[in-house]
Image 1 (tube, one colour):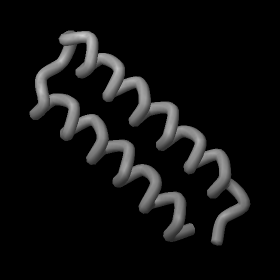
Image 2: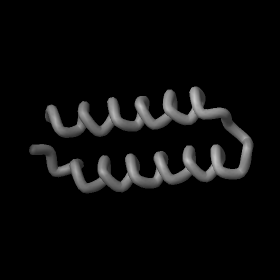
Image 3: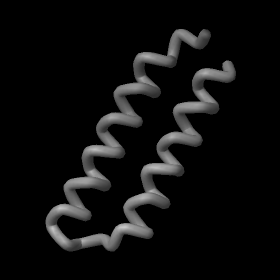
Length: 50
């Protein structure tokens, strides 16, 4: 496990929260929001592979 994992988890949470907030405020549609969250999830998976 990488020493950067806690930072990666924090970035995932912050990025996901931001994407969901944009969706809740009507700035993004569901497809765009899911795409952003999947991107953040891929980054988190990459961090766990280190």
